[in-house]
Length: 203
Image (cartoon, one colour):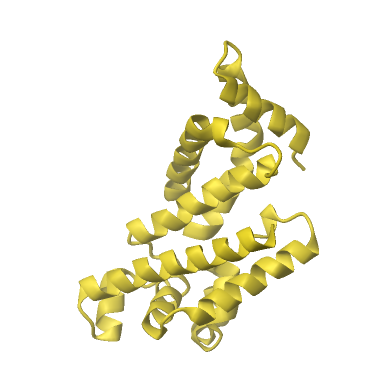
């Protein structure tokens, strides 16, 4: 379990840009990198892409440490949110073919329960310290998924649960490749915006 007080001190020291900021940031990396890498790997599925996301996340943390609101945010949760957002953005940018453990267990049944399938993909429980937080995060995701347009929702399930590439999606759905890519990008963006709106309203 990471010590929020220590992480907060290291973030503030990083933001100070004084002679000790580089050492503080190095220690911050050593302490938090395993957690953020786990968040990224669970979302994108590819170890090499998760590593890229980790480095990108810490670059963002370094440049925006002075924007951390010590009164409004928990430091670990703030860093996890950066990594999660970077991972979700990467899913939209890359042609990620993910075959999740959920699909291995459930096979084609994933399409019969897309809510459950995407709950597995977007399990954010590591960022939640309490069962109530995990329950709310799952409820937000399920509700937001239900508000997506039909093709956006279906494309997300096929791409990130069934492991289809964009090319395979275009063939499966009998739609142009550009259209399929737009559905995936738009679906991810809408899902993220919806969940973030609910998170902000709950604070």
